Figure 1 (tube, helix red, strand yellow):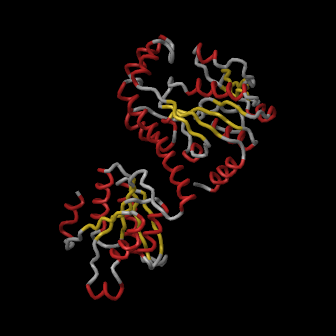
Figure 2 (cartoon, one colour):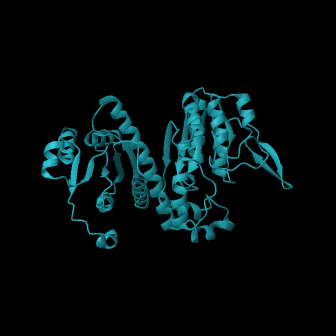
Figure 3 (tube, one colour):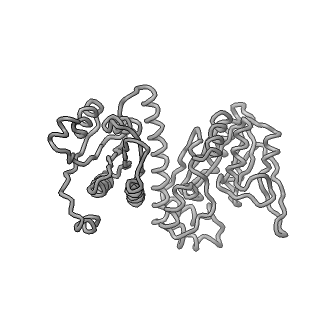
Length: 383
């Protein structure tokens, strides 16, 4: 995270509270849920306003606005046409307890205000001490947008950085089955009649809806998992909680390390688990050849979809165990030692040290056998 992003995130945490209704795609009911929540808070005495709600001509959505005050939108002229945008300055001047803001990923019309993106306007509202309830579709989250483009063959131009989404105090999934969404589409509850058949034949296919729904479910599950681990860690200290499998593979600058890394990647994939690779160097004074080897390991980790970690220290086992605790690792993968018996007696076995240290923590250790390295087999072994 950049210093600007970190600063913004710190400001958000200290200011207004942030709630996001997340959905797999249009039509699941995010805006309706937001309006219902706004109405409930208004009935309990909170000062609630609508900063911006997109009804898209849906009668039911319009009805849910009820008596919630609406801040008039700004009229912006751009390239000879008039557009409507949220008047962020007017919301700040009104300073309600809660503001409802639809479509967090929206790109503002040039000249409509100081920011290009609506999520930046929302950050201003939060920094002003105003609670924000917003909506977002999962495909607009930066870390997911690329995968959606590849899977569905559509361009996702409007994106919200993950760090913004992760600032939400509450992230609630509004779920709907693909079959139900297609029925809603057929009944005219999502798009106008003229667009229904085209949508059903192209973007709103059962396959696409299923893929997007799974992405949304996984994103929210990962967020809940991280919150749970943080809560446990704060209360319980040095313990590992097996809410899901997480692998850590130890790397070194030895010829057999790529094979160990690939083996760990296959093991983690079979368990549908996260995997991190850890390279521990004795100090920061690294030779040019070592730098090239480190970069190769970094690239291989990236190609395998593995998070690459680099740390420094002479007590390898201690650094590995501390890293495992930090990331709530449940499985450690390391290559068998190639030290001579004499070296192990004098310096100790890293494998044995790791085994002794993680035993009481409930972390499993997998030791990958090291074969004699033959440069002529390297290319074949890579496959």
